[in-house]
Length: 422
Image (cartoon, rainbow, N blue to C red; front, top):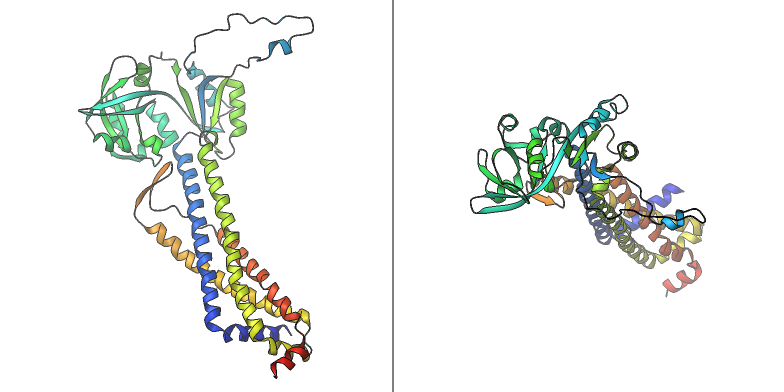
């Protein structure tokens, strides 16, 4: 019986070939657009996470002391006692990590050796870079270049210059590509660094780097000693410590442990990029909700062709009921038609989506995709997105067939045959 219903369903669809193909094409196009859109948004997120994990520190130890201070002393005082705050007004101190070498030794100990892969102390300073009549406010980051290379791989991201020249040249700097473009800087150029306070220093460009992270590419990297001199810090103090850990995706527990032991704020890369990740999450919700809306539109197209089929084939349906076909079998037949139309359109859309994803990914255009810069569009080829969109589309198309199939099941054979013979 199932084969008979399947053959009749195919005859109904092939009998209205133009309308069937139009409906299938509409479902295919909507499926292709949805899969491509999801691939683009999720690909951007995956690309962002990949670049951040490879370039940025996984955990950052900031020079912010964790000293809990009671904010409601009267409420904490014992009954009949007196709470007194003495010398509470203090000068706000800049954030800095003291005795950072002792903290480095802690990370090198057996306690954290397996979890912490690389450690890089740094000093950040907001400075003005000057060359001729061009000037640019930039972030100068003073680092131990060998330690920093293990964190960000900056040695392999140089577009020009050499990291060896940086090591062996006094007051040498590595310049991000954005800064180099804006200020027309090249290797061996001289650039003057003017801090907010203190004496300006003339530096030599030893290389130009490109990481793909816009914030990093808009900065200048100098030696740790240069950063300490510009910030007026002694040799035992830094702005913070960057860490690369074994499991960057599950680093919150480690960050919490380090924060409690060291006494300085430990921030994960997820916390530092929380606003960007939250934006990607909201975009993801919007895109996935579009799947349902477009699927409903496709469902209307499927329902339309089946309603027309019921209207035009009402005499055939009446004859089928007279020959013993039950109402349930007729419902199953029209639901099968909706399923076939949705499946054909969704599968065709999936094939088209593969082509559109490859097309977007192959476009050799450098574009700034939010916080990162990348050549070509970041497209995800995760098969889960194909399965999700195709499954939702087929499901909605099948559900859309219930209304016309219910109408066909309610037809009275005697009445339909009598009216059709007039």
